[in-house]
Each structure stands twice: as structure tokens, then as C-alpha cells.
Image (cartoon, rainbow, N blue to C red; front, side, top):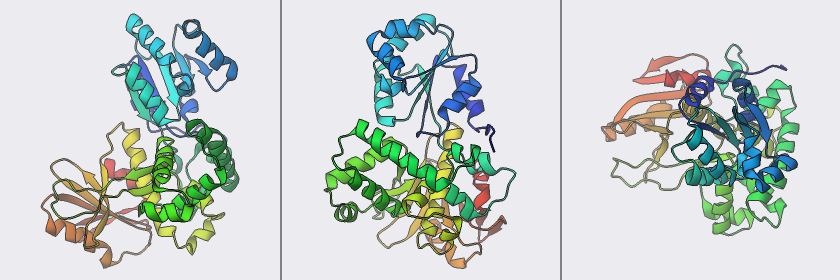
Amino acid sequence: MNMYINRDITNALLRLSKQYPVVTITGPRQSGKTTLSKRIFCKHEYVSLEDISNRSFAEEDPKGFLERYNNGVIIDEIQRVPHLLSYIQTIVDEKDKKGLFILTGSNQFELMSSINQSLAGRTAIIKLLPLSYNELYKDKSPTVEEVIYKGFYPRIHKDNLNPTEMYSFYINTYVERDVRQIMNVQDLSIFIKFLKICAGRTGQIINYSSISNECGVDHKTVKKWLSVLETSYVIKLLQPYYRNINKRVTKSPKLYFYDTGLVCFLLGVNSPEHLNSHPLSGAIFETYVVSDIWKNYYNNVMADNLFYFHDSRGKEVDVIFDKVVSIDQMEIKMSKTINSSYFDNMSYLKSTFNIVDRSFLIYGGDESLNRSNVQIMSWRKITDYFI
């Protein structure tokens, strides 16, 4: 499929470039930030700070470096030279020209801390995650197992790569390079083990003690490493919902990976067929659904309002959409058939609290219908929630 895949975020990116002097695109490595920037802003010059000579020039002579680009520039991996941002601030204040700088970065912590110091109010910030289902399979009907196994990183689909091989290279690059840049990990093999333990807990409430015991590192290290994974867009923590609810609820977040292909690789799943009998297939399916919801939010430049519900009685609803004065609730089941028990927890939440508006069930089938005041949606139609 050696072709460009249109991204849903394109219109928002173009709009923001006409409103702000700087547009910053963040997201994980290989999510398509460079390709998207070059395609949309084809008249801008391009420079990557991964290149040692470019980086040295930018570090040693930031003014001279930026003077080369008077008519618009894409600067890739801007977090490699964070002090460049203060010089960009001076230029945009002087020129007052929209869309002058397009910046990309793959480390959320380094990038955002630098931007907050130098470019607050001057830059639009966009999160570009790997492809959504809608972007990749709009006119196709793959099996759910194929979708989950392949994952959503663009190069896998653009260049028809073997997913297991690609994720192996991705992990090697991420660990050897990014992890070493962010923090000093003495034994990388322990960090790899930690990654695999996390993959085995995708879609689950985090138990820090359990991860600590299994990995052989202390609680503080577990929390630090989880933070590194989150700032690098490998995982995201879904917080519990307890606003407007007086009952005792769980306070620990749930862990999700942004990409199911990476989860499959870390769990040793090396073909779609392996998912048919895998004990974590339901949790991986839930990970797919939640990550696709996040992608739809970010592609529409909408604030993330996702939570989950779990109380002291063990009642749990997979996703809560906080709408301030009310909530929508969603359950996620991989089964292709619908069981009446799937509605129990949503019925409980709706009857117990007067804040529930709409209820949804995402399942592994293809038909969409209404039942028991619940909108049942196919796993292929997650985007419909946002329409």
C-alpha cells in the first residue's frame, strides 16, 4: 500500500496554522508527524534536529540557525534543542505572522515544559496518535483480530511491513535511545520486562505493588517508569470518575496502551489467529476501543473527558464521558453476540445516579441497534459517537 494515508486531523491543522504563529505537533515516534507536516506545509522548508550537524548549529548559534528560515519552517524533534523556543518566541512576536513555525516533538514532558516557558499563548498544540480505524479501514472490512494484531502505526500499512518485526525494531529504538535520553536505566532488560508486565495489564486498574513485586523494582521506580511511558505516548492512564458521586470509588487509574499491535508484540502474539484463544484478548480489544476514542478526540482537537467507574461493590463501567452536567457511559465487549448481562453495570449506574444521559455498548459484531435504552455500536463504528 505504498501511498499516503489521509489524516482526519488535517482540516484542524490547517485552521490552526491560520490562527497561530506556531503549531506544535506532538505524539509518539512513527505516528506520522513528519509526513503530515511535509504534506500539508509543502511550501515550508524542513529541518530535523535529529541530524547532528543541524542540532549543533541550533545549539551553538540559534539566531543564525533560525535566520535561514524566513518564510516558514518545519522543525522536527524540537525538544532536542529546547532553548531554541525562546528565540522562536522573539521572532514570532516581531513578525506577527501566522503559521510561521511548525514544530514536532515525540517527548511530551520535555516539549511541553519548554513550550510552557517560552511559547504559552503563541502556539496551537496538536496530538497526533497512530492511525485511527476510520483513517485506515474506512472502505475495508478486516477481521477484528487482524486489526488488533497489526496495530495502527502508519509504516506497517504504508510499506506492508511484518508487524512483529516492526514492533521489535520500534522497542529497540525506543529503549536504547529514548529511555536512555529521558532517564538513567542501569539495566535495560529490567525495563523491557517492565514493559511486558504492563502489556499484560492493559485495560486493568493499576496495582503498583503487584508490578513492583513482579518486576523487582520499588514503587517509586514503577511510578517513574509509568510516567516515562506516558510522556512518550506509549501508554495513557485513565482516571476514575468520582465527581458528583458520593459513594466510595476506586482512586487508582486504569492502564491502557495507545497501540494494540505493540501490546501483541510484547505479549508474544505473532499472528491474528493467536488472539482467538488468548486470555487477554478481551482486554486488548478494550484497549483498541479506548485508544480509538482518544484518537477521535485529538483528531478533532477536543479536550479529553474520559474516565472509568468502579465502586466498592465491584460495579464497573468501562468508559465514562464527562459532560459536566451529565455523563455518557460505555461498556466494551469483544463478543460478536450480545448477552443481557452486558447491560447490568450500566443499569446500576443509571438507576443509582441521576446524571447518566446516554448509554453505549461497543461489541465485536457488525450490526448496530438499540436495546434496553442502550445504543449498541459495532467496533468498526466508534467514530459515530462523535458525529
